[in-house]
Length: 183
Image (cartoon, rainbow, N blue to C red; front, side, top):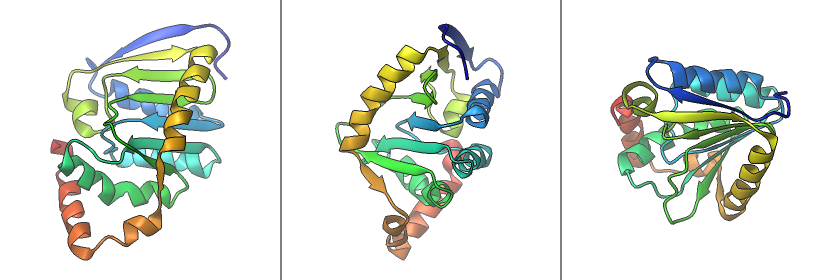
């Protein structure tokens, strides 16, 4: 898909939508698998649709987030929208402590996107972020191997787990999701 050469392209957020556009472009080009590691996972509706579309095309979409987030409001908001990805075939994994602050996206066996941006509205629209886009099969392979260990140690999040949350917890999470653009 991307060739064998190593290409590195820094992505700055000087352009309001630059990082989101790179994420959307990568998801649209994914053919086999996508792995995302992020401490804060609050994608907007467009990114959710892109993740779901990739999964429905047969791409294995895996999202790794900490089992216990250091920002509980973010964790609650993320729980309120997780079902949207799970019903479409995305897989979510809760990684055990210590808190993992990795910000990484891998596509197929060739494309790597890493840096400071989280998958949340603040990172994608407000904060000053710096990410690097790399086309390097060897680097992608090493990072897949490193994150394979995280997947093995993680617990898969299921729809059943989300649905058995009590009504007060679901309401709390839903209210926090309304505030996700500010979290």
